[in-house]
Length: 199
Image (tube, rainbow, N blue to C red; front, side, top):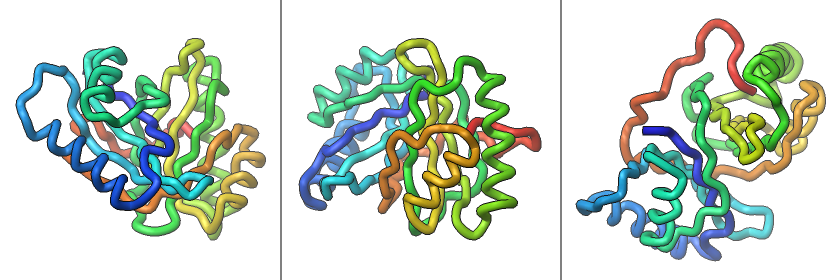
């Protein structure tokens, strides 16, 4: 089973619609089904246009299975990204959390590791009062390069842009997270090692 991050942008116009989408996901998971897909957790997002979105973590046998899951649950998936590694840096923070998408930036895991060293130094030493790195999923992009889906606590999106600029990496999309829905424990989640990890 592979871990994936499934990005569902603008899935709902209202909180009630978002709740309905989550209810469909939960209902599907609680009933027997033939799909080899397991919902782990989701992060509820407030999109730039005021609508709601989700970033969902799944385990599945393939992208095709997750596409079929999206059809059956009526929860469209704009991106389905295979996770190369998962790193928990700090526990999830309850307020002022942002999801940051960094697309197609690293060619190798070693390149990603170098960025992570700088990211941790900048965050912990230079911007400790502004940003706090929580969690990262390093994902394999369609073109074979590496990208990330990161969770940070920050004073505002501008602090995250400044952090990314100082590190020398992109912040292609910054979306506020206003909630986390945990459906089951993630068996692959690991605490951060002492060496650097994906940014």
